[in-house]
Length: 106
Image (cartoon, rainbow, N blue to C red):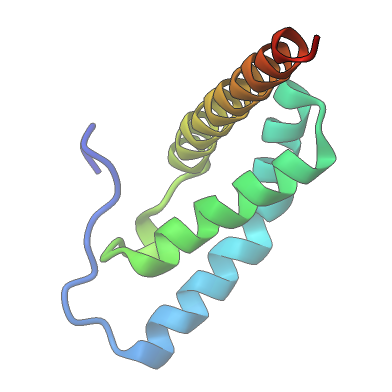
């Protein structure tokens, strides 16, 4: 595997791909979850990010057998940062709306 990430599967039979996905999931899900939870401290966010990481693998052409824990943690970190940025933007907009409503009240 090079620096670009895991190898693609090509035309792997569906049943074999499912077995590989299950094997990858069972072997790494707790490590990915703990990695995210340690960094954000939010159970809900850690669960969402972990689910998103494995859905990314499932939807891609990546061969699950070639995926490393380092790659999964990198994807998880990036997804967590994206989610935290979205949350911050949402919170900032809510504050602006609240401030505008306070100023509008006589």
